[in-house]
Amino acid sequence: MIVQDALLLTQEAELARGALTIIGGGTEQQKATWRTRLPRFGQVPALALHQQLLSEALPEPVPSEALALLEQLGPLAGKVFVPELADFNVSPRSKVGPRGSHPLRPVVDRVCQCLGGLEVDLYVSDSAPRATVMLTDPLGLVLPASLQNLSEAEQVFVVTRCLANAARRSEVVDALDLDTLRLLFAASSRLIDPAAQPADVNDKELSEVTRRLSKALPWLSRGRIEDAARRFAATSTDVARLKRTLTEGSYRVALVFCDDLGMVERMLKGPVEHLGLSEHQAQHLAKHLLAYWLSPAAMSLRRAIGLSQ
Image (cartoon, rainbow, N blue to C red; front, side, top):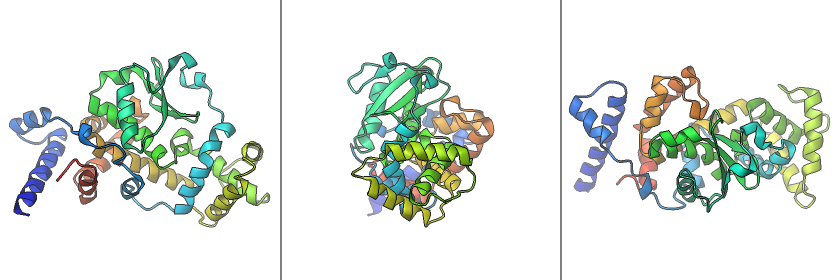
């Protein structure tokens, strides 16, 4: 027990030194030691980041009714809001399947293995402004070609951030912007109550989305989807807060899994195009992630996935 406690204190001290150095503190020796540290994401076993751990990484609990409806809507959302490859500056020729040879494919495969064995088609674009999730079948992930210029740990961070919610079957949260996500949830309410008048959505747009969603419903699972929509409607969940919570949770998972502060350091210095973050968003998020990096919750997650004693 004494040895384990000593190891834990040593690891905590190392992580604290890392946080100190990227905000400009620490001695030159501490900075040099941190720069030579090798992230250990390669030690995380397959399937390590399971549902329970993903939930524990959230900044606050998410209603189970919301997650259940997101899971039901996931396979349908791409039929309601059909993704066009051209919108993401990619084409079918850009597709890098699981057996593809692009340098970023092994990073995606590694993350997918640890996140429950996700199946993902990779698209690499020379002009895509940021990493993007596409509601294709299988799920699509668009990565800027410039991601290859980052360290492997930073690549792991970006990919994990994009796919963590897919592992909890909530990929629509990342694939759709807030207004579109609100429309999708509101359309699910209209399925069970045609007179429903959800706030924050345009009624004309809602009618069209409801029509497309109803058309996309599989006959055999329609009742299950309607039941999930009914339970969700009873919770009065704030969709903006739901999206924000799941997004921050995915950043937390990405930070611990990549076992590195390189991307947080980039956030502190300005905008991060690979993640679509403005300077203000990046710096605000970096402060939250630094606090999480040293938290008991992060240490617990590290231990659970084999990155700490």
